Amino acid sequence: MMSNKWLSTTASALLVLTSHQVNAQQPSEIKKAKPNTPDISEQRQQHLRGAITPERAWWDVKHYQLSLAVDIGDRSFTGENVITYQVIDSAKELQVELQAPMKLEAAVQAGQSLAIRQEGYSYFISPNEPQQIGQEYQLTLTFSGQPHEAKNAPWDGGITWSEDEDGMPFIASSNQGIGASIWWPNKDHGYDEPDRGIDMLIEVPRPLFNVSNGRLINIEDQGDSRVFHWRVINPINNYGVNINIADYVNFAEQYQGENGVLDMDYYVLRANEEKARVHFGDAKRTIEALEHWFGPYPFYQDSYKLVEAPYLGMEHQSSVTYGNNYQQGYKGRDLSETGWGLKWDFLIVHETAHEWFANSITAKDVADLWIQESFTTYAEGLFVEYHYGKAAGAEYLRGQRQNIRNDKPMIGTYHQHQVGSYDIYPKGANMLHTLRQLLNDDSKWREILRGLNKVFYHQTVTTEQVENYIAEQSGLELNKFFDQYLRDSRIPVLEYRLMDGEFKARWRHVVAGFTMAIPAKFTGDVAADQQKFALTTDWQTFELPQGATGIQWEKNYYIAQLLIE
Image (spheres, rainbow, N blue to C red):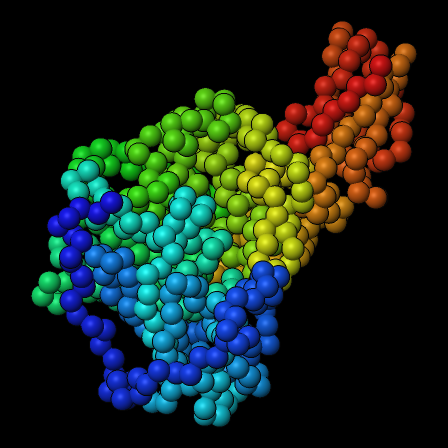
């Protein structure tokens, strides 16, 4: 519950609108899809949310200007979003999302209120003026309401309303999955990011401070409240846009990185400043390790921030939120149970790695979310390797295998806003670790990781693009490999049988046509070096070196083994 002293406090100033907008603020006519039936089927809503519909495809977002007044007393928002877009095809209705209980009150273009049609939480707006291909236009959306409260942030997201230990408000947004439209109206699909970023003008009551994405441009005094103007100049995914409101203190440092000086700012609760100054040392060494593997931090112009939040954490672009209670590991645990995961703060490393995979390289459809989570979980192992050695990094990644479920494919259902298995984290990381073994060239592997971040810099991508790039750069035939690990839930099983002077081996529980070469070394009184065996789904017979009594398959491949007696 909020303290009594804040229950009657509201943001006092109204949002400033231009004169033609003020004159045009007659409520737009909003028609429900079905008379007296505001709801639509879940399948229909998932399609509207997950598909690049004709009402989305004809316009390209260039910039958002989001103005928001936060009323802490009744936990409500009032605001407007000015969308600048370019017409790229014949105009139709224009589709945006805003989820209940938030309400879209009006849509205005060139001083005229536009008709709005509603299906579920998708809104279809009819422009009044001709939309010329190649031209840019602005659309102003006004909205208000009490946004959905997060039940278990960040997984069941929304707005978190809480207090710090001194009874001061501690408020934050987190909405990956559930969507940015849970609190502000936008084109809520991953394929289209605003090319010129976003300006955020967030009004909060004194003495609170708001931290959002990008750089702080200015703070405007409104008497009992203040407006914090934050600006992002790079493309940004919608779910990465955030607000964080608290009695923050700020400290900063600079990092001499691959692209020059990176400004690194830290916003923490007043009571935690002393320990944060020590604990957040993991941030700089995370940037150091990940620039080595992935290339330059992708948002030098927008800076890097680590912001304390009232939930575990999230990868908000250039505004990474942190709530791991200044512990090593994940809530004090090592997810790999190897010991390596307790030498660094999991939240800082994992969420910072998302600046490369999620924020710079973003899955065009959430069905391909493995691109973001697999590479980021893999980055944990790369961080360990950079600071503690190659063997340590490999051990950490192998330890993550205990968390794999193999319950369903890692790729979800396209055009339905549906992700695949939780395995996109540990299994995806071990898939990439296996792929590195197949390539067997660490310098080339690092080139591929850095190349991905160069070729797909600030882009939305598909699985096909990532697969093709890795295959082309590695020179490997990887179609069946990716089919097996991404599109099938089963783990490849290596069956083998030892016999006098020879052994047989094959792959089972794999997609048709699957082949993979795997190294092995022999046990016993034998001097033979490690050898590589190209196995298929058919039994193949190989000689055992003289004196060999057993065989040990390469442990860094993510497979299962079955010795048939």
